[in-house]
Length: 382
Ligand SMILES: Cc1ncc(COP(=O)(O)O)c(C=O)c1O
Picture 1 (cartoon, rainbow, N blue to C red):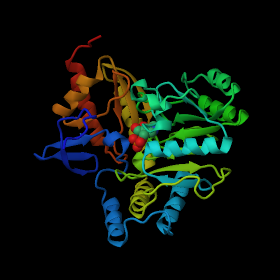
Picture 2 (picture 1 turned 30 degrees about the horizontal axis):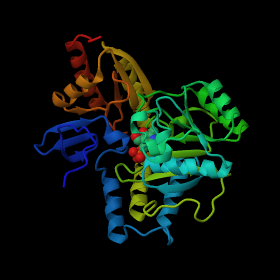
Picture 3 (picture 1 turned 45 degrees about the vertical axis):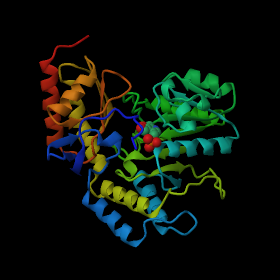
Picture 4 (picture 1 turned 90 degrees about the horizontal axis):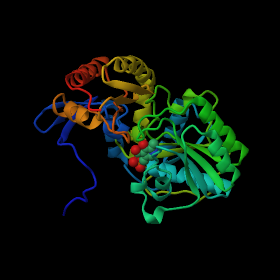
């Protein structure tokens, strides 16, 4: 049987990984500045993570949400504490798209409306509700098309208010920092404006922190850089399980639950909760949020000084680098010559960095040296 061929793949097959390093079958070492789409938060093969999963595996790995699963409560408590949202409620699922799908449903149920607003450049996932809010017509199938979904210009509060005035908007969804779109940071006035408008017109504000959450930007959620913002719903996945599939929705205390309103077979299973707990414990014990912030403060200005770099955006360890040339060949050279993984984005000139949160200064310095050599060695193509 052949695999359904939907992914353009690099010519690398990692066999072993530790921290921010990967090794292929020939033992060649790679530096991981991409974390497999921002998933590796506490570093590959973290001993505490591995141990917690192994211990859980030897006890019970799965039972469905039809029995008491105490580790879910332990996990929710820890998440409330580390994220500074102790009064919110948690719904556990398995991926980022699923988290968004559930958040959209909750907003729609609560407000008894069907429409949503998202923003240009957005990526919210590939399931039917999330994909129509994603700004990429190529991945929206005819069966997903809807006329009550509006992708509005970034930073345009007037456009949002006009749409809200037309009625039938259950929610506004926005990424804490736009990831796939090329690392665009919403300013605090925009986020607070959305929150105020949502309240004024009876809609919910959904913060998609699937990529930007879990300490990546130096705060637990990127939107927490905006003082006083309390979204109705916050979605997360990626860094949550450091590679173990787990997603979740944080739900404002005013939103009421009822039996059967949401559900999933796998969500919140014992093994996923053990993985999730291990991640939170490591983030807390190793002070990874502070570390991510510190590493960003080191890396961003250093990148801005490189010839060939037009702009650097982001916070902490979620960074977009705009080059004076196409990013593709630079990224290929980084892999082939210097054995460094980086990420692409919607913008052809942008490199996306999403390394593990415990990456070391010397690892970032070696990336800076390699990128400098590449950028100094070629002349701009434009
Ligand atoms: C902001 C954001 N939301 C949602 C998703 C979808 O997550 P998943 O691929 O786990 O469904 C992604 C994935 O890249 C994302 O970056």
